[in-house]
Image (tube, rainbow, N blue to C red; front, side, top):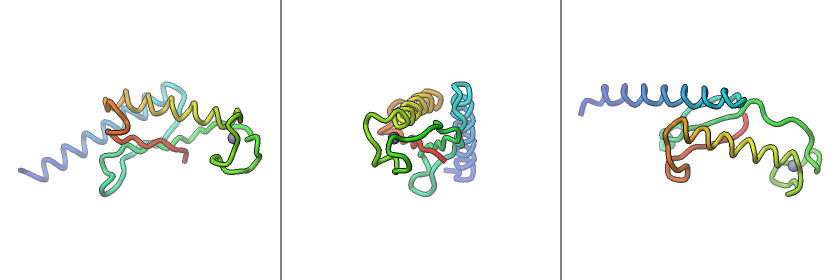
Length: 107
Ligand SMILES: [Zn+2]
């Protein structure tokens, strides 16, 4: 195998994937940094949303994980996360995120 050629192919494929995912997210109003993981996670798509939902959590400044299930702010985060995940999955052509490794978070 020509490793230089194979590495160039993988690089080009990942750059194309990043661009496609970033553009699809933007078309749906989600501004994000899109990259890939490093090392053993290099096949992962890493989406970091920049325009996170605005507002206050019911529990004030408590971290997300310790907020309440009925918090509208938490609901907005969950909704944006789900939307970004579906868009990233579709735009990348990856079929199943638990197998094909897409990570969505907020920068
Ligand atoms: Zn909350």
